[in-house]
Image (cartoon, rainbow, N blue to C red):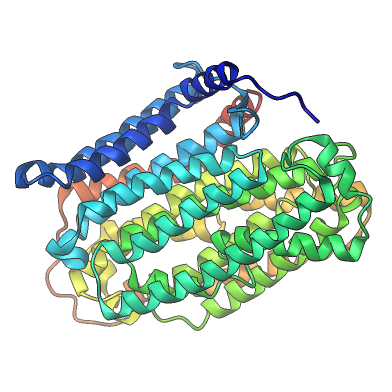
Amino acid sequence: MPAPIAPQDTIRLTAEGLSSLGPECLLLLGFLLVLGLDLLPSPKLRSALPRFAFLVLLAVAVWQGLQVFGGVPFVTGSLLMGMLYQDGLALWGSWLFSSAAVLSLLIMGFGWKHETGSSTKNEFFAVLLAVVLGLNLLVRSSNLLMLFLSLELVSIGSYLLVLLASITPARVEAGVKYILYGMFASGVMLYGISFLYGLSGMLQFLEPAFWTSLTKVPLVFLTLVWGLVLAGILFKLAGFPFHFWAPDVYQTAPTGVVAFFSTAPKTAAVLVLLRFCAGGAETLNNLQVSNPSLFLLLQVAAVGTLVLGNFTALLQQDAKRLMAYSSIAHAGFLLLTLLLGADSSRSAVLFYVTVLLFSNMGFFLVIQLLQNATGSTAIEAWAGMGKKAPYVGALAVVFLLSLIGLPPTGGFVAKLLVFSQLWEGYQATGQMVFFLLLAGALFLTAVALYYYLKIPYSLFMRRKECGDKIKFPLGAYLFLALLCIPVLLFFFKADWLVKVLQQVLSL
């Protein structure tokens, strides 16, 4: 047994750990301040809290951006007596979470009166700060219990985000489904974690001894255990078979909240899976050989998620519901990048989620603007809107091309990296499974081309009286351009982002 830690050493180690988690401490402080100040009987103060929460998130995003590029020191290694592990992977993920929250609030700003009205409470912004904090802790977790607690903080906060913006019958129904599926997935995951602890005798899943002890467990039983553990993570990823909550929540929740759900929790979930895969393949650098149980489950989840997401999206006539199944399909592509369990997977995953952030945010902003103009998110209701608002329609096509994975957008390079990973796996192992997955992924990308292009077809090709051109706020045009720039830049200067990611991952 490890020697007990003296109380004074515990205090010192805790203080050192907290000093290395500056952005996370700022998020916690912001959460407590928003929650506390909202209790004061000062309408003027309470009305300023949403702007304060936004500034906190913006400050955290800037802080983490400076850490990425070396402007602010960044401490790596084990923190808080082994509960957390901080490295470049966690840093880039945290920056994406903060950026997603900032962009989501900006999108909500354009639909404030249409989707939330005056019923929005300051608790919404406090909960958003808590969710971002939970995501930051989730990608830093090196202890199974810390992993579960962080995941629960994110899950409970996500349930509240669906309902706190404003309450409608449809949102209540979607929120109840979300909570029920989430409680089931969390309970199953906790049950699996108890088995992992019993089999390995430890909770530190980044330690080599944890993985060595699991190699002695019978394959069938270990596959069952990993299936239980993956339940909670696949729920946040909206992966098969824990995807049922996504369509209803995406269709009914405020567009800005949906934009956040489509990026930040998915990124956190896939980075946690990446840590599992890296730990499982630490010695052999081949997940199929070192951890066949995890490889098999990820393979089944990836295929099921891809097939269900793409083919069900073909039937959708509502843009937000279509984006729900699109998001499920992208989760499948992210799962494919994990199958090698190699170091090269980290760059491919981070490149994919970075491009997905800007592509998703850009198109959800388009959805918000067109919803404001037509009062509907039905694709048929947008017929001819591309002629009335050509700037918005043109940029919508750019974002959709990126989501499909076509040039000249960063989505093309992201998909190419996924396909390259599968081809590399086929060449390295000679296993036909990688070749079949590659062929299936290419086919399903062609399927995605059909359902994504339904929207540009409705915008520009459907006949409808043109009428006067629709004008949106100047800020909306600038915001769309700001989101479009990285989507195009990551195609023409993909090597620049790859170099930045390699530099961050070397921390």
